[in-house]
Amino acid sequence: MSPTGEQALADQHQGAPPPQSRKSGGGGGGSRGGKGRSGGGGQSRDVQVSKALSKLLRHDAVKAGLELDDEGFAGVGEVLQWNRLKPLKVTFDDILTSVSDNSKQRFALKLNHRLTPPPEPTSTTPSDWLIRANQGHSIAIESSALLTPITLEADNIPPVVVHGTYYAFYPSIVASGGLKKMSRNHIHFSTGLPEDKGGVVSGMRNDAEVLIYVDVRKSLEEGGTSWWVSDNGVVLSEGDGEGVVGTGVWKRVEGRKKEVGVLWEEGREVGELPQEFRDRKGPSGKGVSRGDGGGGRGKGKGKGKGRGKGREEKGGEAGEGVACPLEQEDTPE
Image (cartoon, rainbow, N blue to C red; front, side):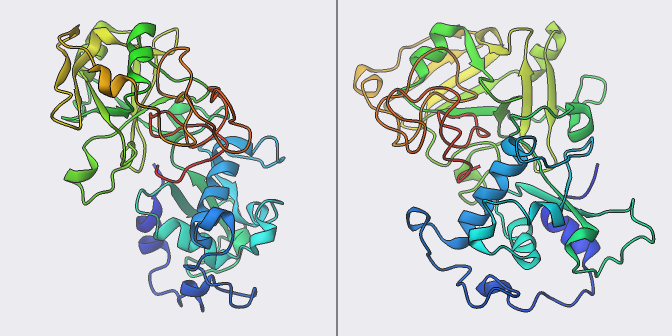
């Protein structure tokens, strides 16, 4: 597999001169205050750039006419020409920041070795580089080219595989028979909790309220469901033939709050979500998750196209397996 995020930069930019103005958004666009706030709903410019890159590389590449290789990589030069990036005046320096500074390592960067002559590792020419999103795609990407399979033979099953969701959506997940990939290619899982890993963990939103632990070994032994791990450590599954990771392989379900207690254990329901939590609305701007089961609908209004009922294919980031609309894209993942 190709190097990811900080590792790519460490390996391929060792000894390279640092970009001239990384902290201020860098290169050729004047002082834009990379870490400062500039529109985008009060989000910092770096967050706006990261979200735009996620939207392009995970969802809009085909629509934008961007060619991806078998591993999901696109040319950085072509990425910088995308219309949504132009108002932000994104530079190669900004691309490096998005790759190296992202706490969840959403992106991977590598040299384009298909070029003749091969580019130098110290190159700062955008066309010498390729970038991809490590996971979270809704566009068609071959899993075997992008991800590492988790198998019984390889004995590489993570000790903890957990999906985070919200109180508002948990009843519909149970009613539908399990976790569904919705409009994404995969259901997303983390290998730990945010509080166990310095507050940030790839594969789960920090504000998830219900934790669904899955028995991947049992799932593999039963057959019919493939499991993968991305370069940034997110565990992924397409589910069974119907795109579902069923309740039969749920090892344990519990609330982040002690008052919720244990809801599921070893494939069977042992408790119900207390009514006081069941009645709570999902977080603002989050509809039915791409990884969150059934036909239930999020309450409240999402932004952009995810209004009203929070339809499953609208709204925020759907890579973390919690209720969120695809249009709002990628902040926590």
